[in-house]
Length: 386
Image (cartoon, rainbow, N blue to C red):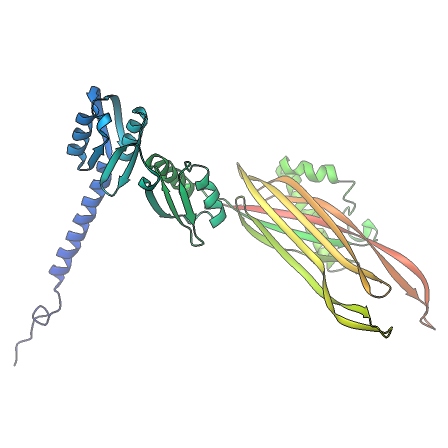
């Protein structure tokens, strides 16, 4: 019987070799981490020449420092504990009334030219391109430049003091908590029905003060509003002239907006009179009618938020000379403070439609009636707690 060849002889690494490589990788990561920790320095000096201070910093940190000759004899007084080296040298340069730039592991202290700017390249996932450009632009110096890209990459060229502050700002933005809210809106159409048929009060004007008071009321008031909403939703399935127009659901991060559009584009012919005096169709123009809803949430703490709601309802109600469309648009906009888990009746829109009543025999128009209904806007909100 032949002796089985070892995996090592076949060119396959043994487990011991794998373990040794892993230990070496962990050791290298530890050394890298120690290098990062070494950037925090603690110094104390009194009336020390800057040339001696620069030599001392170079010896203790391993960086290279080049300074303008005019700074050699200037004196340094400082006491710092646990600060980053970039921040220390930036503040020393400021105290000396000069500037500083960095290229890799080399620092230059002295008057800078526009081409001496340091460069920062970083990716920020929290902000959009325009928001990132605005945030960075607030801190740029006169000679500073910044470029932002759609994938969140930002490139900044400026003085090292400015870049240090920009890095601190971006880091704060990245670690800030992100609040998320779920908002459900209900647009309910209520026709000319008696309240007794529904079992709840359908007149929002009478109870408007109560509806807004529940924003900060006790649990009993909140339960009462939820019960009213549930009764109305049930009634929409049983009563003919009550219906749910829309019930959009939004998942929103703090400070962001969301929009839905449920509309129909109606083609309206464009008419023109020819030289012969006839009317011809030269094309079509789309008229959009329907529903558009936009919401914005801004967290204000303690499971509360400011909710902004915009509602637009539009309809095509007729034509001028059977050519030009008549479009009716209603807009509703409001802002209110909501609690997580709260139910709110936040407003209403009055709708009037003209209905042609025909005779049962000749099917001729006998009269025109105006049918009124109210669009109630309800909201429920929940904060997602992680």
